[in-house]
Image 1: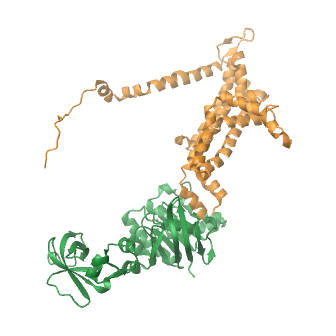
Image 2: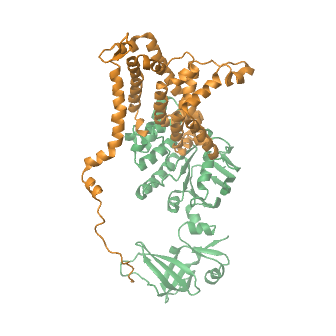
Image 3: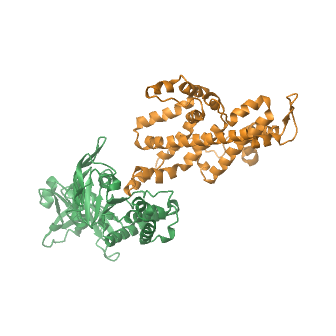
Amino acid sequence: MTDTTTNSQPRSVRRSRPVSSYLLRRPKLRLLALLALPMTWIIGVYIFSLFLLLITAFWNVDPFTSLVSPGFNLENFSLVLTNPSYIATSVRTLLIALTVTLVCIMFAVPLGIFMAKIARPWLRNTLAVAITLPLWAGYLVKIIAMRLVFTEEGFFNWAMSPIGVRGPGFSVPIVILTLTYLWFPYMALPVYTAIRQIPPNLFDASSDMGAKGFTTVWRVVIPLIVPAMIAGSVFTFSLSLGDYLAARFTGGATQMIGSIIAANINLNPPVAAAYSMVPITFVVIYLMVARRTGSLERM
Amino acid sequence: MALVELRDICKTFGSVKAADNVSNDNESGEFNTQLGPSGSGKTTVLRIIAGFEEPDSGTVRLNGVDITHLPPFDRDVNTVFQDYALFPHMTVQDNVEYGLRTRKVPKALRAQQAGEAIASVKLEHATDRLPHQLSGGQRQRIALARAMVLRPKVLLLDEPLGALDRQLREEMQVELKNIQRDAGITFIFVTHDQEEAMRMSDRIVIFNEGRVEQVGTPEEVYERPATRFVAGFLGAANIVAGDPARKIFGRTTTVSIRPERMQLQPVSYSAASGEFAVTATVKEAAFVGANTLYVVDTDDGVRLSISRTNTQSPGHDNRFAPGDRVLAVWHDRHIAEIPA
């Protein structure tokens, strides 16, 4: 046998790395280095500002000077929880957010099935781009676009005038449509991805056992994409709940929680703070329900 | 009339001819196997029978009725899939009830029938489990129960044992064969494993490059291969063509003879009647347990494989070593002539 070893020197120790070696033996310090930045963000900025908001909700505004004075009273909370117009707005906002979520699901599921199972690759890719494209445009741009379409002399009424149909004007349905337009990608993408991940054999198996298309969708596809629908709904629901510009520009007289908070933010910050606890509570409840289904682990 | 008749089935995927003029009859009550290497078209033909693919041309008849263009859900056939295709969100019971439910079988009846099907594959204790809580072998059984519970005229099985380990696969081979015999359902079974095909089948259809090479009982296709491909694919074979075939075997066609049908004898051996012999030199001798595999070169330069069963007690066997001069001996009736 010929000797093929090179003349490199055998080394048992590489050049030393003092920082790495030091950290290697101190797991707590390592953890601190890892979490320093994210924790500063979460605790310092996010939690802290929410905490300030909560505190402000217990303060009140002096009726004469209009200055905010610290203190502790529950008047703001009793106002937003008992005043009929606040309650109506809360309920309206909740229903709008739920409807937006449902409409998104109703659009996303058939589209996802078409893209994942029927469309040829070029069409699938085109649609995927088409779905994500609105995310590139500014949020306000999209709201204004919807406003232009549904305004009195807008595109919708013009296009529908030959058949004598007129749009509803700026109102709750248009707010729902606008919010659906804004948040649809957040539902469509996870749903499409989930449908693509269903093994093709399951579709074959279902039809092999006598199921037609609708039965397969209802009994096989929907149950398997529930986690994706819930993941998507966390976005569509909570983003709709907090929105106020859609209502402001496409809602006419429609008021959502956000509209009232926005209106009070300068006039009466404590009331705005108290009222902002309502959507936060809705979202927390929603997340707890979603967590029970085990779907959040897939996000 | 055969139960499943395939006539001139053609199917092309892009530029690949997956099925090229396939015609075949599957008789009622038989265990039919479609055997071939991967990409030979055996699975495509199965999927055409199931209705998952439509052939470009040709017809599929079930019980004399043309079903070529019927969707899968209108065919009286069911499939056991390669990776089982159990619904991951349904319990074993719900999986087995699925087909009964789509056929609107009343609830009590379908629970009973599904229960019987699950019991027939011995998984009564697992009815409430989800597929991911089952072992590979158990999933296989449930896939079988789910298809059998619908009592199809034909059960299609697409390499159902491929994912199982060797021991489990052999158990399932016996079990599948028993289930088929007891239920009297016609099976069309797809596999690439020759031994599995021969062990289970009443009839084997051998596929290669989209075409049917030969159809016959396991014995027929093994002993009388119709083509070179069949001879080489089903076990080992010495395939000799042209001049050497004429010189050594005295045939003008290509001939095939199995290694185990040839013997090695010392050069002093005198052939019995009907036996033929040629002198050769041992090139390799490999002991593989039950057999010793020899490779010899005849004086005409033809290489032959010869398998000897190790039947003698150790040390008393007639062994040969590389370099030994020997006689390669065969009986004329063991030669298969390959027409093509």
